Image (cartoon, rainbow, N blue to C red):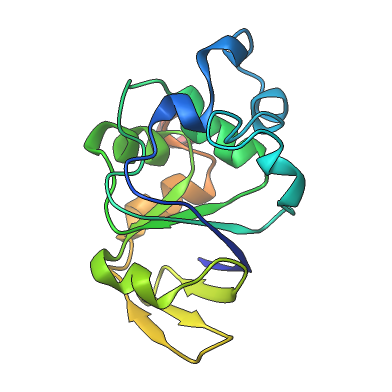
Length: 168
């Protein structure tokens, strides 16, 4: 599982209401939520984002409520992976369940600046900053997590697994 894109860096303690404000929770459509991604942090933030770009955050990203809409909004914005110093635990789990790759790199996040191009190899456990040459180690995803993410999240992955068992 590889990702390559331009970084959009945000700070510490970005909560789920900054990611997708409650006033936009009238839909669960990823595209609609994605159009309002980070609206609580910076109105119009999404206008700088292109499909495949990478969100980079500081400490405790995704704190606050346990709304699943937050990782759905990020994916809906075309962002396939979030790299952070650390994540709020409930956001981390929700992100994986919703099919959003999340990688915790601790102080390694300091080697990534806004607007840089990075390549992430989640299977090998390395992030390469193409602008600086810095290599940032990250815990690689286990095979079942990679399969779940590639399948679109927990529910689609589980449906597929159940159908495979039923067909046997």
